[in-house]
Image (tube, rainbow, N blue to C red):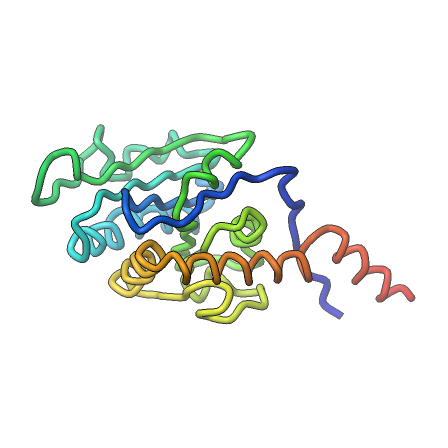
Length: 209
C-alpha cells in the first residue's frame, strides 16, 4: 500500500481572482540549496522567460521563494545581474524577485497567477504542487515535476516540458480565467480528497486495520 505525501491546508487564504489584464505573475517555491530547484529556476529565467517575452507584450513578474535564494542571485538574469531586456517601454521589462525563506506564503500565493514547477531533475513528491493546490492557485509543471501525484493534464494542472510549451501554458492560464478557475477548483478538490493530513491518517489507519 502506498500512503501519499501531503501538506497542511492553509488556515485562511485570500486567493487572487484570475484576471485577463495586468502583468503575468509566476511563483516558484523551493529550497534552492537543492540542485533540482536551482536548475528549475535557471530554466524558468533563462529559457521560459525569453519564450514568454516573444509570445506576449504584457509585463511578466517572477517570484522565486525559498531558502538559499540569496546565494543563487548571481546565477540569474535579475536587474542586478545581466538584466533581460525586451523590445518596448522599460516599464514592461520582466521583473525577477528573489526572496529567501518566507514564513507565510499566503500573501505571495494571493498575488500570483500561476505556480510554476519547471523541474527537470529530482524525485519524490513535489510538496510545492500540493501547496499550490491547497491555496487554490493554478499550476503549470513539467511531467517530472508532477510525478507521484495523481493528476491529469488539463484537469488539475497543465503539463509542458520544453520552454516554448511551458510559456504557452502559463499564458493560457492567464488569458483564460475560466480555465484558471476550473484547474484551481479541481486541484483543490483533489488535495482535500487525498493529500491532507487527515486523509493520510485515514490511509495509515486502514493499512493497520
